[in-house]
Length: 288
Figure 1: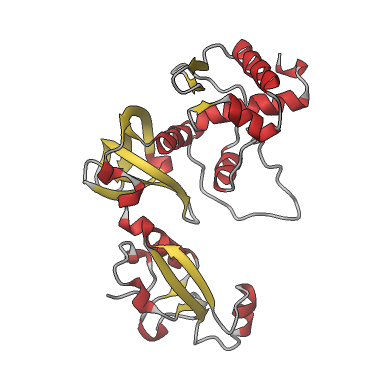
Figure 2 (figure 1 turned 90 degrees about the vertical axis):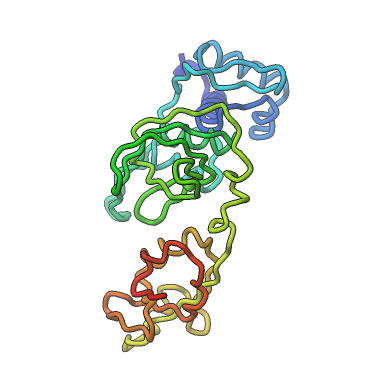
């Protein structure tokens, strides 16, 4: 039946499908705001969507929104790469077609993306500030059942992870998204101490000053790579992400920049700024 619907309406139906899957709800006002349509047109779109997928949504009169039902099955096949990239960039038209690889412009090889259903569960929990019951495989303790309260999904340069409060350990931690075995959204509001506002490492902003490694013979090449001004590039990074960035960018964080300049072409000019950051085991050469 989708083939018989014009492209414009397919876009609107895909937007409904996307919001239900990744945010858990959508209202007519959301559709009108996105596509500049009228109230009557929005009503017809929801009627069409319900005809195509009657078990996907229900209208909750208290919120005046359509909510995702437990038996939800997406009408559109959302590609993981496009979904994750789109969510980072404010993606919202519901379409997430796969990327057609180019023979002349090749991106870096990446790890396998997490299952879209896992991402969808995380996003609904984040959007509605709910807890998640899940099974997670840890490098240190193996598979175990946990209850987490996620508030962000982050690409650390190598893989996607969720920033969440872990009720098992009573603190905010990072969870690799591909290591979740299953996940169930708990219709239970997050407690005050579990909310993003209480995640000190997430809310703290660290000022980083990166310079070419002093051992380099021609530092100007690195200055050009990073579009440095006056020989440095300044970044404002959340403390929870600092370690990942320093590792990904191969930044020498040792005293007197003692690491090899051939492997570490950047150096941290202000190492004192790292005081109090938690994940510094990832920072190359750093010593407290």
